[in-house]
Amino acid sequence: MKKLENKVAIITGGAMGNGLGIAKVFLKYGADIAILDYAECIEETINNLKKEFSDRNIIGFKVDIRDKAKVKSSVDEIIKHYKKIDILINNAGVAKLMSFVDMPDEVRDFHFDINIKGTWNVTQAVVPYMKKNESSSIVNLSSVTGPRVADAGEVAYATTKAAILGFSKALAVELVDLKIRSNAILPGYILTPMVEGIGRDTNPDDPQKVIDGIASAIPMKRLGTIEELGELAAFLASDESSYITGHEFVIDGGSTIPETMSVGI
Image (cartoon, rainbow, N blue to C red; front, side, top):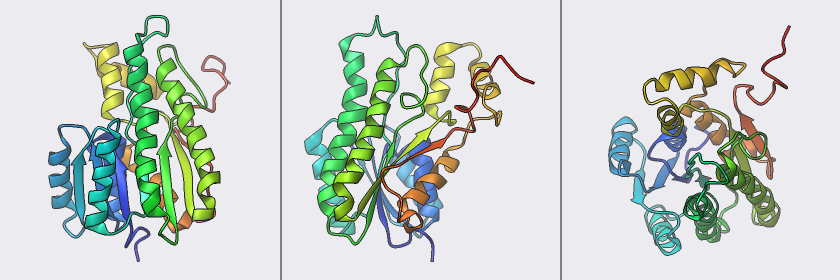
C-alpha cells in the first residue's frame, strides 16, 4: 500500500514550483488532491496532471487565498467532491525583493496578506473538517529566510516566513487533542519559477549566471528540486511521521551550515 493511499490533500499554490512538485509526489504515493491557486496556468496544470496520473482524482480551483469567503466556498466544494480532507499543504506564497526603507505599504501588505493571512484563511477553513478524522496533517511552507538567515531586500518576505514557523508551532499545540499534526518545512534554494525570476531581475542578460552563483555557495553545489521537497512533504503528511508535530525541517543542501564563505582549509 502506498504511503498516501486513501488520503485527500489540499495543496495551495500547486499549479507551479514547489506546489507542483508536492502535487506530483503526492499523486505518486496514491493521494487524491485538490489544488488551490490563483495562477493562470492552473487549468493547464490540472490537465497535465490528469494525463500523467490517470488513476488518481485531481481537482482544482482558481482562488486568491486573500479572499476568505472564496477560500471557504472552495473548501466546501472539495468536501462535496471528496467527502473528507486528510492533509493540508500551505505552500502558496510570494516574494518581492525591495529595500525596507523604500518599501511602500502596498508591497509589505502583499506579502503579509498572502503569506500570513492567506495561510490563516485556508487553515481555518479546513480544520473543522479535519476534526472529524482519526488523524490529519498540516504542513506549512516556511523558509530558511527569516527563521535562519536573511539577505538585504528580504525584510517583508523574511518576516512572513518567520511568522509561518510560529504559526505552525502554536497550531500544533492547539490542535494536538484533535489528532491534527502541524509541521513546517524550511526550504533553502529550490529551483522554482520564483528563483528563476530572481535570476532575471538580478541579471536580465544572463539569469543563469545568478543561479550558478547561488549554487556555488551551497555545499552540495546545486539547488534542490521541487520533487525533493515533495518527498519531505509526503513524509510529514503520511503516517510515517505520526509522532512528529510542532517541528521544523530544513531542506537546503547544507546552505545554512557554513559559518562563512571566505575561510576554508
